[in-house]
Length: 100
Ligand SMILES: [Zn+2]
Image (tube, rainbow, N blue to C red; front, side, top):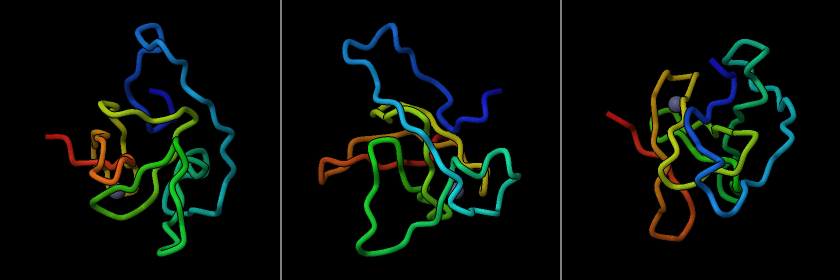
């Protein structure tokens, strides 16, 4: 399994290629070192999500992928072991919901 939290995507079916992101370790220490760059703490009001980030609705950690996230993507939150699906939020941004 890939270390990237983005579990499923299919570039070949997408007309517009996904933007890629280089991730840096921000010191998130609730997962093993190899996975740390894929998560960060939400810094509260004033913080903003990038196109490759979404907040876990369960544990409020920011999940980060090396690729831009889009509605329908499935992501995995390792800190709380939740499987999530990315949806379009009312404000036009992206949000994650627990996938059952
Ligand atoms: Zn979580």
